[in-house]
Amino acid sequence: MITNAQFKNEVQLIIENAVREDVGEGDYSSLACIPLNALGKAKLLIKDNGIIAGISFAKQVFNYIDSNLVVETLMNDGDSVKFGDIAFYVEGSKQSILKAERIVLNAMQRMSAIATKTNFYVEILKGTNTKILDTRKTTPGFRALEKWAVAIGGGVNHRFALYDMIMLKDNHIDFAGGITKAITMTKNYLKQHQLDLPIVVEARDLDEISEILNNDGVYRILIDNFNYTDTQKAIELIGDQCLTESSGGIDEVTLRHYAECGVDYISSGALTHSVSNMDLSLKAL
View (tube, rainbow, N blue to C red):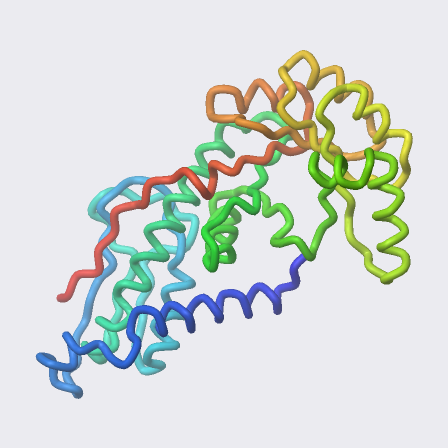
């Protein structure tokens, strides 16, 4: 899986690119009407209900823009928030605060929406042994923050990218010439290149479940687009031979039913690709 150092580097790249994209040669609006040495203070105002996420990221952005900015946090990532709450104050150069404003808000609004949706799913799963997973269905260039938000909301991060887990899905299997061929070739490749990566294999029906189980070395079976009855049959077939994951259009209505079939994980792209941003504002004081 991705290391802490790799993850921190991804976040740093997001900050650097966001500043390049948004500030460019300069924030001319602020440069034009606010004195360079003017000091001020602003608050992060919450105008919605849910789970707040991105406070730690905001502090990194402020520090990157201007290390002299002082952030006073009143809340932590993962806290429940309501309309009218204040998450933090930031104090220092007015120009610096304004330079960071939109980057902070864009990130926190989306991260908070993802954390809120994830937490909603986690609450539905309470009392079961099933955990909610995210996917690679993320915004290009923003993945680290979206997966960070899932973790803040109580979810579990799936693989970060193509390089930290083997996931043999339908197209891999079909291109390789079948399940057994794909698994055998994968294990040989990992051995040849001295790579230690878990192998997840997608199954489209119960026959494919049986074939996967005839191969050693599979970490988890992805039970994709199965109905409840066949999911239960798959769980019985698999037993304790490997971990299990359900996926495929599972939402808040069906989530609990699949969990009660006994799967270890349920993956949901909707955690990151179908959310409405939390309403937040950075207001000058």
